[in-house]
Amino acid sequence: EVAGFRAFKQLRIERLGRVNLVVGKNSIGKSCLLEAIRLYAEQGSLQVLLQLLSARDEDTEPVRRYIISDSDNEISPFLQVQHLFYGRKNLEQINHPIEIGSLRTNRNKLRINLGVVDENRESDGPRALRPFHAASQPSLFEDEYIDAIPGLSITFGRETEQVFPLIRERFYRPRLDTRINLNRTRSIFVSSQGLSMSDVDRYWDQIKLRDSKKKVLSALQIIASEIEDVDIFGVVERTRDRVVKVRIHEMGEPLPLRSMGDGLNRVFGLTVALVNASDGILLVDEIESGLHYSVQRDLWRLIFQTARQLNVQVFATTHSWDCIESFQKAAIEDENTEGMLIRLQRKGDEIVPTLFDEQRLTIVSQEQIEVR
Image 1: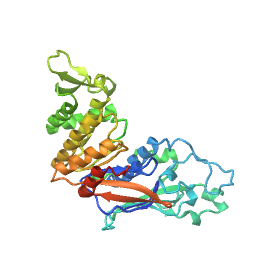
Image 2 (image 1 turned 90 degrees about the vertical axis):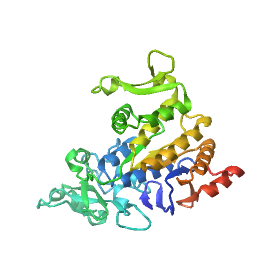
Image 3 (image 1 turned 120 degrees about the vertical axis):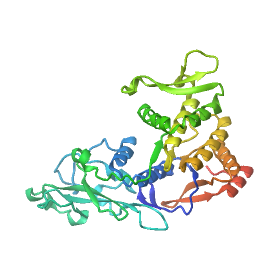
Image 4 (image 1 turned 135 degrees about the horizontal axis):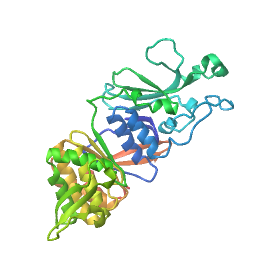
């Protein structure tokens, strides 16, 4: 269940598969669902929250007015967290928290709320978050209340509520991110543009340690069977100079992977991420990006097989009918790994899901029923 987050007033998905493909019209909330799952898996990590805002350029425009809209009082720029809340209202108008968690239990629910933090507190105890309506008086701008500022609270399960001021320079301080939990679910996100080189470099080191290079090589061979080996070359300490190269049969020098087309680079990034998401979650936006329809079925086969072997739950989005059809065929072939198609559509002011398990998806594919 996702409530109060971005496009979702309240989204309830009754069932998930190990491999899930999310479809729907533009701006319906496909990417929002990936963001919600990522934020939940990371237990409301401040780092992830900032990344979500930055990815959509939502942290760049400063808010200089505080609470009373007609006031001329100005303070330091705030972080634009209102973009994460349903309706994108002004900070003081948001009165419902973000809640993400299981439909079956409240034990590990993520809750994110907005309010006012009194930075001028006398004790050294934890900050307290007060509702906006209790602080929306002109007296806030008097000297004795000058340190009362907007704040964000994050709670996961039974953990103690943690409160952070939204003044940008304070929020960014590394010491404030005390929510590091070694037990949280590992999640890896792959955008439609793919992984950054710094991410590839970091994940590649883990692949070597786990001896999982064969899976990456097998994935590349789906597109180019003549590839015999793949590795990253360059000075380890200088990420910018690091280059992914492949060795081609009967060719002397390795070739840069980027010189061989978008498809190979996309498959490389997806597989590197999948292998590193062991015992966790892989999130992929527009998974078909850069891939010819003829290779998608084999790629889905590899994803289904590897997700089962490494205990990974996969969530991907697509606009492509070829991708849906390839997903359906791979799901039917793999009897041990459940695939689920999740279609998001708007009804009134809410977004609702329609679920297609493998049996229903077969009918959709055979009858060419439009689900995108």
